[in-house]
Image 1 (cartoon, rainbow over the protein chains, first blue to last red):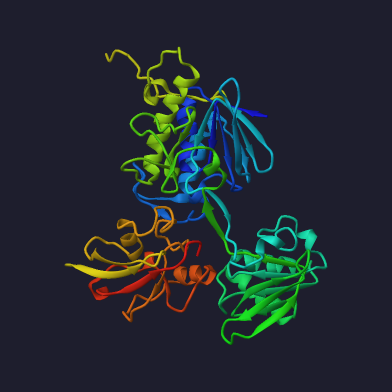
Image 2: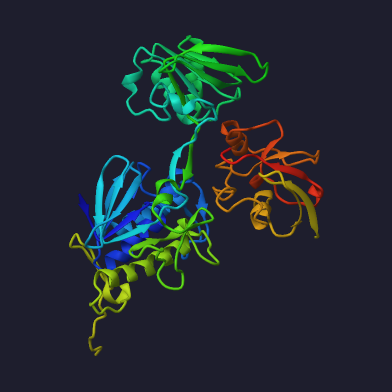
Length: 352
Length: 110
């Protein structure tokens, strides 16, 4: 069981900055994120795009902002559970919460701060009638262990980098690789596109374009798929062991929606007059995941919400402690790692 | 600059005639959000970066629209329920030329 003071769900910019504000109050944080790296949308969707409304930064790339935040919170040694999705929450007798991920990792904290943004990023699934029947019986949306495809007939659908890269990779492992894409054009790194062309010419990748998968067949497990050429409407059956649709990721609020929190407009309602707490005391929601009258989904608003949330969390954890906010310029930053940042002292010296 | 009229069919099949300003740097996706023609969080999820297809529209009038960028082209090639007349609303700025434009929101989950 991972124990911490504030358990933050979502490692986007708001969640990361919450670690800093908590750290100033000597509260420890642990973050859970479904993506394999911290940064949320900024790192996953648009790392190379500029942001112009971060106060003090006329222009900063989303990826740089994440790097800076990681540097800023380093002294406070946050823990991370990455690549796992927060699944269930339960309240213990002592008032603290246990959050368990889809992989069974358990986290215990008196405070939970949901900084989940748009939700967790999940694979986009094609719309096919009996798709769910074949999930884990031949259909997979991501490739975890390439070895299981050894000597198998694999069909990949998609036209982006991951479809190209996995087709290339599996060409040497699987007995047959078929790549199906709705267009003739693929969009990916130039050398990936060229490599697929080369493998196609060598007969190592069977390319079907423009086409899409329109049917799945098999008794218990997938045996063949129907592929429809979109230009001629001609349909053909392809015998396969595995079908891997790679259509990117899309955000879903996911299991958090089942936690008994008040939801409005696909977001979690919070008390914005005070501390961004939800209808469940001890659970807060900050950043893009929350809603209140006048809400704006801006990173800078998330930073503010994170700051007030930490003050409230402190008072919940230490109801009898007196505390006044201190400027970092005055108090410096004392890291849990023993590091200390502070303003240089002025010297008092007579000038003769 | 003046407002133009757009005819927008929502996901429930209701047709809305709405006024859209041409001087507010708005796009079709934002017009739909401003009139709340689809629940918040179901349209314009990526914020207008052509990185999701939640604002996919079918264009049902023959107005001439700006060419698709590479990003829009790529997104539409991965999206679902795509037709020849599919466009991403976030990539269509509201201009005076679009007066009378008739569009339909593609299903959720596109």
